[in-house]
Image 1 (cartoon, rainbow, N blue to C red):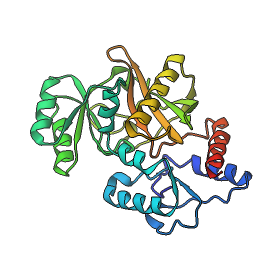
Image 2 (cartoon, helix red, strand yellow; image 1 turned 90 degrees about the vertical axis):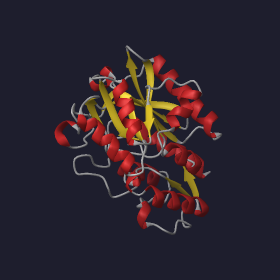
Image 3 (cartoon, rainbow, N blue to C red; image 1 turned 60 degrees about the horizontal axis):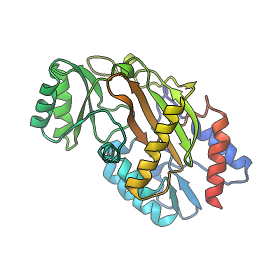
Image 4 (tube, rainbow, N blue to C red; image 1 turned 45 degrees about the vertical axis):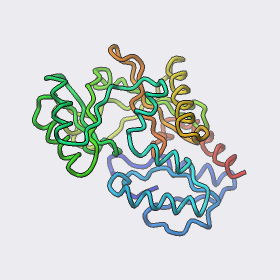
Amino acid sequence: MTDSYSVEDPDHDTPLLLDALRDRGVDAAAVVWHRTDDLTGFDALVIRSPWDYPERPDEFAVWLERAAAQTRVYNDPAVIRWNLDKHYLRDLESAGVRVVPTDYCRTAEDVADALMRHGDDSIVVKPAVSAGARDTGLFHADDPAARALGERIVASGGVAMVQPEVAELSAGAEKALYAIAGHFTHAIAKGALLAHGGGLRGGVYVENPVLVEATDAERAFADEVLQAVAGVTGHTVPLYARIDTVDSAEHGLVLLEAELIEPALNLHVASHATDIVADAIVRLLG
């Protein structure tokens, strides 16, 4: 856990999980990763919400290695390190998972070339290492602001991703499918977040999660993604995963993101999942 939640988008999961674990006789506590050096007193550490890791990725990597040397860490640190950088989407694409076509730009020239290929169509620019839609914008490809954002990302040493706008995503049709220990638990729709021309709708990051049904095809796709993750990383299916999808007329059912580090589980709108998560953690403790 971190203390970096905003007033507009608070942490709903941690209090519910702590209560459920304590009800099961587990001595559970929330800790802040960058304030916690000694973890030897814990039988296990479940990483839940280090939202500020993109601001200090090297520090987070060092802490993660130290944590793994002191206790069992879930999800597996190797999977987390792989999942930190959205280049993992290329690995999953190579494994047969459908994703949104993406240019990965390392230089200002790469950014300019990628944008030029899209003409005046709408595109999304974002960093390969990010969370909470940081430095992410929806623009027309010929908007100078799109190029400026991409150049700012690469100038800071990052990689800029350029993707075509998915109309259904901008219309709020994204679905987040959650799996605990490899088993589907619930699906959430949170609506569109990006404002055209750059920035966030309403000016701040605020999710509006609504519990929705997942189709058989969506569940099967989420299973496909999880199996691909296990195959690519060489590790077992993770304790928790959020598989972001959208069914696009142009691209089909595609993966937007496989979140294995810090997904909000939205337990306050999917109360049945709280017991499932707590029971899965208890099983890990043995």
